[in-house]
Image 1 (cartoon, helix red, strand yellow):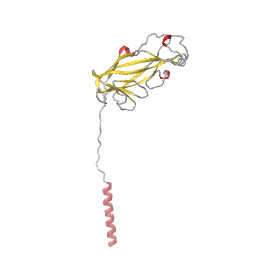
Image 2 (image 1 turned 45 degrees about the horizontal axis):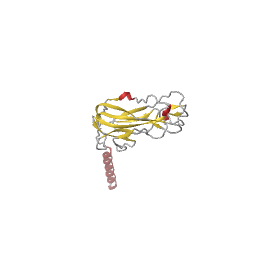
Image 3 (image 1 turned 60 degrees about the vertical axis):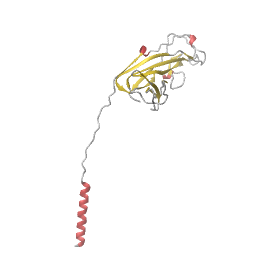
Image 4 (image 1 turned 180 degrees about the horizontal axis):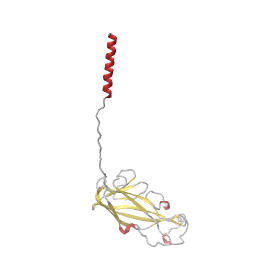
Length: 216
């Protein structure tokens, strides 16, 4: 009899424990909603962003591999946004295969004499303002705004971002109206790089696409 009572007691305890494990705790879900709004922005460039070197002659082309750096041309760029934002941009060289010298700050000017290369140009960002206040500028491929930060910076490709900084700190400047001069300096390659002398009229065909983003 004692053995029977012990077995029955053990069975009862087992059922009680099993019932406790089977019970479900109440649950509820928490949701986080919202919308990240980006303000509409418009981009305007002095002279519609055309940097025209006009008519160049044979005297502008050096022999062999000698280069001829031309005078810089500067144009004012203004980006107007309807709300406060951080703003950066990246550039795509639409004539990248024609650049005559290496470097992520050099952009192509087109081809001549088949695969000959006319030269390259560089671009500097300077005289920057946000909401009519002077700022510094930066160019970075690491997400660190202190990279290449100064009153001017070379515009670069290869995944570099360029933007505006507070004048006294390594902090991006927020605002509605962003301004800067983009100064272009073209360099003509020599006759060897051009695959020989120029026989017909040739157009410089440098072209960049600026893609703007809200934030770094």
